[in-house]
Length: 437
Image (cartoon, rainbow, N blue to C red):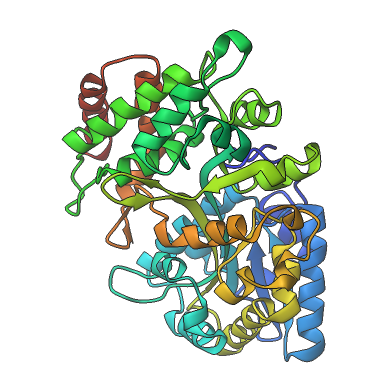
């Protein structure tokens, strides 16, 4: 199955919790984290090669630590349902590795051990974590909900030589992005100025988010009211629609972005850092001529990305939580963390500054093709990651309903097809109000 946020193929090892429980033993999943002798761990790393690395990390921990860990793989798309079912039945694992939305949902139910998260972060060294990563892991009340583990960021990947030849600045500001799109656009010679998501998919919402947030636009305000028809949002939609004039014909998806860049039909695309592996493996020398712009700036800087975290469940036994804390610290330390990140070079980026800057991290076939500046820009972008569903550190449950109907992506598609931004914003804001009311 293709991951719609990255365009990478995901291979299933165990389909959902049902199969995993049969494979790993039902007893290991019962009792809210397993019995005291076995600590249950859920991971969304379902690819076979990544599973082997994680098994090795568990074995290295068990050889030195005090406790046994039972790993259960969960498809990312199945995670919300499985967490909901396990919460209701009292069978949550002792800890799990997943993204921001599940973390916020569990945190809002007071099901995460903030004491465990604080303990691990303090032990590793709070100052070594990127501040943006810790901020994303912190509730509106100031509680650290989970331990940042890794993440990916989305930004502009662009061909440096083409920009240099045209005298263009890095595509970080609205003006610079538009100038580059106009300058590089030559459709008669199968060259396009830009590729941004314009199909009615999550990719379109992800691409559009930093434009809106850099202009101060939100979907919901602090009172949970729909403000999608604000002047700031209309301006962002209008600008995004103007960029579509310089894109290839049709609705653009992550496949379009990936293919046109690799085929040198476009010199500037929005994509996640997972593209680093595609560029390194599919082309000769392209990595050396590719630069990364990690944010979009107008009134403020904004990036889009995903943070994956280790979540320790508060309902687990004291013994299981202690094992979870020790294992997480084990993984985020020394060679273990390097092995962990190298499961997906470029896609799994360090949240520890010392690691991001280290030679050990860069000692990887894929990463060696990229300069230190690009690698630093990727990890540094954690400080600017923003998502529509988060307001003052709190996730709004209402945004989940909006996302499930692809309403932001619908607005992006419509302005990309030439519809008036104000009309689109008014219409989509009305639909959003109907959904949450």
